[in-house]
Image 1 (tube, helix red, strand yellow):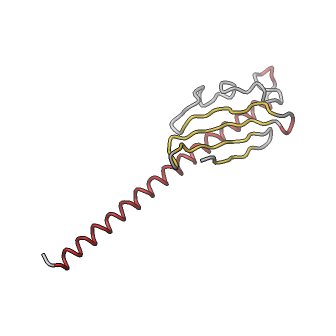
Image 2: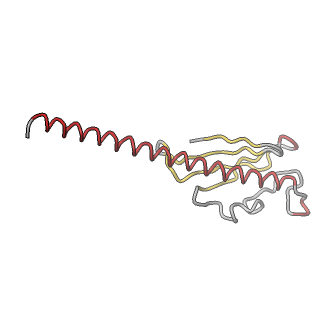
Image 3: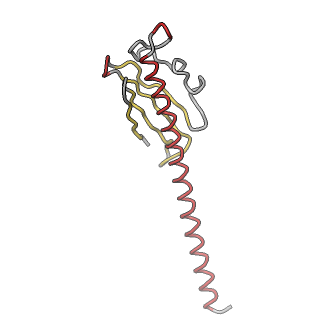
Length: 136
């Protein structure tokens, strides 16, 4: 083989190697973003259920305008399991504050790793609103 052919083969191998590396990176980023989106969706659903619990009278199994009695089973936590295909979910704080300052913090830990640790998100649930924070 001539030098020109060897040079073209080496150049082709380098281009294919770079393309494979970029493809793997894009696939990993896509998987992380998909896991974050799924966690976010589940946490918004759980936040809505927590707000329903807050408004429901205690005689009907609710909190009676309080988050104090909120448990995973009280909000039918993903069919009474704190995990699903997207990750695991925990109630970190329940019942802090009173009235409009009452607060529940629900944490979701995903199945994908980002920089060596699992994807994680918090949702802060108030009686009439919620806010989402991406931890990792």
